[in-house]
Structures are given as C-alpha cells and as structure tokens.
Length: 277
Image (cartoon, rainbow, N blue to C red; front, side, top):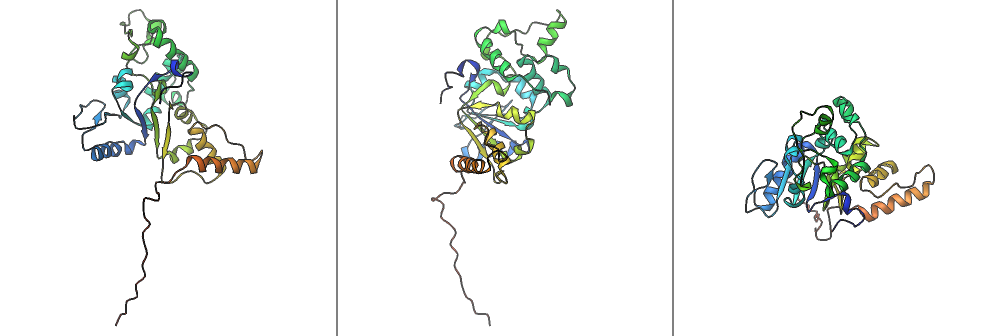
C-alpha cells in the first residue's frame, strides 16, 4: 500500500518488509528464508544469488547499518532483518538523536544515551526538509559529524547531495511496506520505556506480531499490546471496568489470529483394547 498522503513527505518510502527479531533468532530467520525460498539470502555485506526470489538484507550490527544507504533499504530490498538489540545500542541511539537534532544528549555516556528521549517529530520534520533540500539540513554520512563540524573547521566535508545516498539512516525514517515483531510477547515487559517508544515509532502500512505466548494475562498487557500496534490506548479498568473488558476483548477478536485453521484437520483419537495374556 502507498504511504498515506498526509505522511508521505516525512518518510522515505520503502518496498521492504521490516522484520525485528531477538538477536539469538536472527540467524534462524535468515536460514528459514534460505530453506523455504530454495536460494541464498543476502547478508549486510554479502552478495546475492540469482535463484533467490526475494532480496533479503540481514543487518546484524550497527557497523552494517552504517554502510546501508536510503536507496538500498527503499528500493533494493524485499525483506530487512534486524535484531531488537540494534535499535537499543548506543551507536544507533546517538545516530537517532543526531538526526532528530538532540545534539546535547549525544554526549551522554553509553548507559545514559540508550535512555535518552529522541524528538521523533523533529526527526520527521528534518526528514521532510532533507528530502527537498539536503544541503539545508546538512546531514552527514558519519555519525557525530554535525557535532564535530560545529567544533572544528578542519573536519573533512561529508555532505550529502542525493537524499537516497545518505548512509546510516535510522529505521524510524522509513515507511515500511510491513513491520513484523517476532516474539513480541517479550516486548510487553519493557512497559513505558524509551525502547518501547522506539518500536512504536516504526511506521508501515501493516504491523504484524508473532508469538506462541501472547501477553493476554490481564487488561494492562492487552493495552500495551494495542499500543505496540498503534491501535491507541484502551480504556482503563480503573475508570470503567466493564468498558475496558469489552474493548480489550473486541481488540483480541478483531486482531488476534491463531496459526490453525479449518484446513488443518485435528488429530483423530482411536481407542484400542488389547488383551494381554
């Protein structure tokens, strides 16, 4: 689906599906694509096989993301595999803060910078300006270049003439065709944290969550789940318990699906009596 007109100026439109996975499952996802597509997938620094029907880009570290361009992630990938850990790393957070214009927070320690709040609205506005007049925004390919330029005139020029050639964009700048959260039940524990907000700020035409144990123990968990999928805030059980339960159930009925269907026949049980002599 195309980017909604109201949002189009503020994002780089991508044809790719963004799949976020726990770091220990990234290689497994990569292997599953290879197995079921009968071809080879593409790593962040690897080549591609002509027999693979999809262009798979696996970004395992910030170093690989630094080498990625806007064009690569918009038009040269069908699936982008990323670990959750990458989004929460100090290097990624500093780049996000830099592109958002939060320069002061970039100087924080690693333990503090991962908890620093980025101005996402400013990021959207800067992205819109950059797409039209890249020199006016002055983004660089290298993280920290904007801060260095302000301190010294001896820093080599790293100006970006073509917006699609920008290296090291952040995932929040793209409008993805689809976003998939693998093992999303693990995300509920984050609660109202900067990390959880980062996931909410990822935008796309469709949002999927995969889990074998959906977090539906209580209304608070279901409400957090709805926020992750940008459904909005469900009514609080402390304000109107009956309405809260009704809305939570309506959310689950409409959006939750099991991976079983009428096409999968149940296992038939047969009882046999065997005489033992």
